[in-house]
Length: 252
Ligand code: PEP
Image (cartoon, rainbow, N blue to C red; front, top):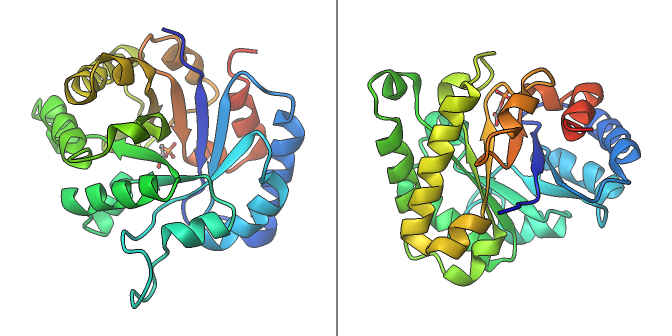
């Protein structure tokens, strides 16, 4: 089945407002004619309005890197789904390994965040992936399946077209190490089978599964050639216009 490729940029806690605006401008200049793939950028919260000023209502989606699951109220330091949308977001990243690891986000929190985002009409990119220790102990499948099952507990089927999965082996994020295309493809296949079991064949065939972890212009082509790899979530190499633009045009 043909799925529209997705290339997404996670800017993490980087860039000034001016830098984010300049990067958004350069991306837009170089991607405005693209209509055969999805492009999404995830700036940090304060940089979202600057990016949205350039990219809102274009072919480039804008997402938050996180949200809080409550609707509003006394949750100092948190950001709601409504606030993300109000600032121009169409998407949100949920369950990034840096959130799970540094900020102790557990399965239940990830599940609540997904439900809040989907019911608020935000598209969700759910990140899953194993640590180095889990990888070395042969636990990859168990971890990824657990993360998917817990994340999707009681998630309404009506929202499935607003979901993406990003498989990001934690040992490959920001380390320069990438899973081989064959290994990544094997895990993507496990993810698709798990989606099939949870949601049925149609949803499993339609959902885009991105790979993330040190994706660069020189390795994206071999990753994207794999049947079950539908896109890339890019951290480091998305911070420079030149490399992210070449990632967007990976097959041109
Ligand atoms: C990420 O954090 O989502 C990521 C994939 O980072 P990097 O590309 O730098 O490994």
